[in-house]
Image (cartoon, rainbow, N blue to C red; front, side, top):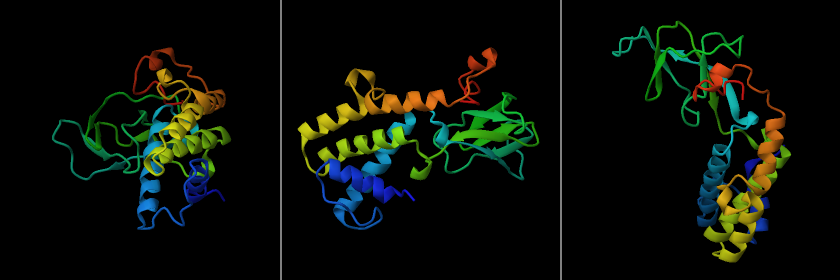
Length: 205
């Protein structure tokens, strides 16, 4: 089974850095690799709504009503990345969009008795596509080439392979291949009205 440490050490090899025994070790190099792993993974996942990073969760309803005038308050999952992509009051119908709500910090306030949220999470490497794994590993290697090996030339070379031309803001190179690969396997949006809503428009993306 593919584990984070395996991916991290593949990147270390590309960056000509020594492998680490564990990402949770207290050694300085292991700590650097762990920080780089989390930083680069967050960056890569932030460039596209990869299908393997999406999850539909039922929101937990709080006992006390909110002070904002809505009937109910729901807590958003702690492991989400950013705001929810979309909300629905019927999880059996992925194209039923719910828009009558208020986002308040880590809570959703609404009059609906039950809500589900489409959120983005940090997926385990075993869920990644092959193209994303390749792109992320190369991007991590580029980061390690600079932060661990202090080799700016190698960093530039690896980053170019991972992300392409800097003018593409990270959406080129191997990562572009991962984005295109994922887009081909993702259902297109059938509701033009929902597409205009930045929050609900990607419920099925």
